[in-house]
Each structure stands twice: as C-alpha cells, then as structure tokens.
Length: 576
Image 1 (cartoon, rainbow, N blue to C red):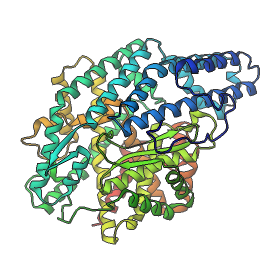
Image 2: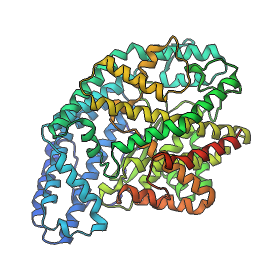
Image 3: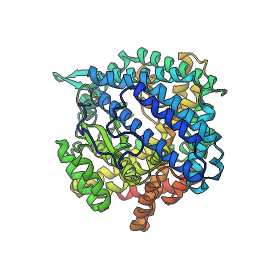
C-alpha cells in the first residue's frame, strides 16, 4: 500500500510454497492454498513429511499475517484516510473470517494426524499444545462475532484519534496536550488538564456504549465456546497455561501490600516539595522541584539518532538492528492529527522485520517509548532465523520483558540526551513511573476480572466497582470537582476496549525486566547475553523457561515482588 513509508520488502527467505508474484488480495485468491495444504497433509506419511508441511503452513501464515499488519499500520498511521480504512476493513471483513476457518481446519487435521505424537517433543511441544487449544476453542459461529468486535475496536480508535482541543489559539491533539502537564505554571496545567478531561467526557457515553457492545459480543463468544464466562474463555484463548486468575489476584495483593505504601510515600514527598496540602490530577506529571520540563529533543530525527547512540553503548548487534529499521524506513514516530493514539511495534513476518509506531511530541516519555518499542523490535530481529511462524512471537508476558528491560538498560545511557543531573532526574522519573504503573495495572486487570465475571452488571454497578478499585489502588490524589472524570478514567485505557485481559502481562513482564536489570548490576555482560539468548527463543518454549533463560523467576506474588521493590527504593534514594 502506498500509504506505507517502507514500501515493498524482500521476504527473509524465498517463497517455496506460495508463488512469489501472487497477490493475496481476496479470499478467492487465498482459499486454494488452504485447500492444497489440507490435501497435502493426507500424504504426510513420516515425521519429516509432517515437519515439511508445518513449514508450508508457516510460510502461508507469515505472508497473510504481514498483509494484515501492513493494512493495520496504514490505517493507524492515517485514521482519516478512506483508502487506508477501506483496506483494513476489507481484510477484517472479507479475508480474516476465511483465514480463521482455514487455519482451524488445518490445525484440526494436524491434531488428528497419526504422526503428530511422533514429532520431537522439545521442538514441537508448544506448537502442539497451542494448536490443540485452538481446535478446542474454535467455533464457526464466532467468526462473524469476532469480525464485529474488530470493527467496533476500529471505530473506538477512530473516535479517540479524532479528538482535539483548542488551546492558546491552536488546535491540539490530546497527546500533544500532555506537554502542558509538565509546565510549572499550575494554573496552566489545570487549564490543559481540564480541557482534555472535559473533551473526553464529551464522548464518555459513546465510550460506554461502545464498550457495552463489545462486552455483549464477548459474552456471546465465550458462551458459544462452552465456557461459563468470558474470563475463563480468554485465559485459555490467550494461552495462559502457566498461570491462572488466582495468580493474578496474588499480583493484586502484592501491589496493595508492597507497592502502595511506596507509591503513597512518593506522592507525599511530591506534595511536600510542591508545598501543596493535597495533590490534584494535574500535579503528578510536573517536576516537584519546579525545574523546567525535560526537553530531550525537538526534532524526531534527532531523537532517533540519539537513541541509536544509546544502543551503540548497550550492544553492537542491537544497534545494528535499530539501524536496519532506519534504513528501511520502519519508523513512524511523530504525532500528527489523524494518527491513532498510542504506540506499538508490529512485525512484518514474511520480511521478518519490525515496524515501530508512536506519537512523539518532545517528552522524556517519548524516549522511553522508543526504547520500549525498540525492545520489541529486537525481539522480532532476534527470532529471525525461526522458520515456524508460530514461534516468531513469544507469549505477551515475555514480549514485554524484552521491551521493559530495554527501557531500564537504555536509561543507563541517557547522557546521550542530557547532562548528568538531568539524566539522573530522568532515571528517577522512570523508576517512579514503574511504582506508579503497578497500581494502575492491578486496577485495570482487577476491573476486567470483575466485569466479565459479572456480565449482567449495570453501568452504575460498573462505575461503582471502578471507584472501589480506585480507592484500593488510586493513591492519595484529590479529585474533588472532577469526580465524573475520575469515574470514567478507564476510558483512556485502549486495552480494555481493543485487547481484553491484555494488561496484567505488563505487570508480570515488569517484574521480569527488573530481574534482568538487577542481574545486570552484578554481571552486565552475562545479563545482556541471557537477555539476547532468551529473545532468540521467540515463542518456542513455555513461558517459565523463557523467563528462566533471561535470568528471571516466573513468579509474581509478594515474595517475588519484595527484592525488586527494595532495589527500586535503593536506586531512588541514590538518585535524589
């Protein structure tokens, strides 16, 4: 698609099954290849035959996945472009349903194949488990419901991406307004915060309605698959074989027990430094010492060049991977009107290259976001040699270890953006951010556990549950006069709308990343080698083994939290 900056990219390996010049732009063009694969598996008489067939499935899967990624990237880069929107929706409505049915049939044939049990366990254990689960969960009647779900999510993104406010005589996106929350003029901060909060409230009813439509679809999807509720369905469909909802509750308890005291201590310290009787929502992002906001860059190209220098310090191989992305124009980083909010890394599986999307406006968090998404990109690059498409992606809980570890490791070299004092300040802000995000993760996760185990709740009951969780995890911040904005604060969390139950992964991964960072303080070379080796495994091993390879235990209860929170406390004290 011409809307993409990177154009055509050569496949990592020449196609062996799908013709190189075939344009897979309709289900009619794609379906024959599924039919061929269904016929070919019947002739697989040996383990070697079945392994070769798996690679053919992987080739087709990677090609189609890349096509979907390209359309999604174009749509999020240009939400107001009708051609981009049409291309994405065409894939969602006319191609994706067939793909789901096609891959289900192939997975079913694999599960039923007599040679399946003879495949080498060490190589195929994870794929076998996941494909068997997919067959168990798939229901044909859910395909159109999932298509509706995706379309509703796209509408939410379009609605949020179009929101702007008039501030100081200029039209600003809500992302751009974040700059003003770091200004020392408290009245200016309040004005900017209230303008954004009120703009969000204008679409609050629409957000609630959109979510209720999504929830109704999800409840029906889980019922069709024979589950008692959507939470149970989603934990299985997300491949959470190695932990259960009870483990999530242990995470919530650990946050309440160990993190909340430190979080409130940091808030109290901030209030004292700012000489305030109480902290308001617009007081949490400004420097409490009254220093000017950190301005790491004014030009996105400069941000990219300085970030490359950080990777030069960290590791030559990683720096080379980042340069490859620059060379292939696999970065779209600047904020602009009509661009979807947020940031992500998307893989282009046939080329086996990563693409980074974000909304940089000149803040320190932009540097952190780029380090974060680069960690994901390094994961994609590390797994390039993996020919089984299913293994090119690790479970989300470990994908985020890749990204969050790079934030912590990269932050050791922030002098590329700042002088020594400002670099220390940025590092402290980042660590404070980790303490701040743990309660938010617990809130978002616990909220979704409640929502989907109480599917008949009213909007008022949902609001009440949100406020109960905010009392538990919200910290000592005064929302007087802005109770409605507090009540609807969850509307800003796109995961709740687009990727249900995808948020606890950030908390689990943050613990893994803190372990990688902790290890690096003892033996930096070994910690980095373990990190890279773990990334190279892709998704070929179960989650606990991936954590172990990176030097991190797979545990997220109070005992696991304790040494890591103590480490953060020690580092914060040293950075004062």
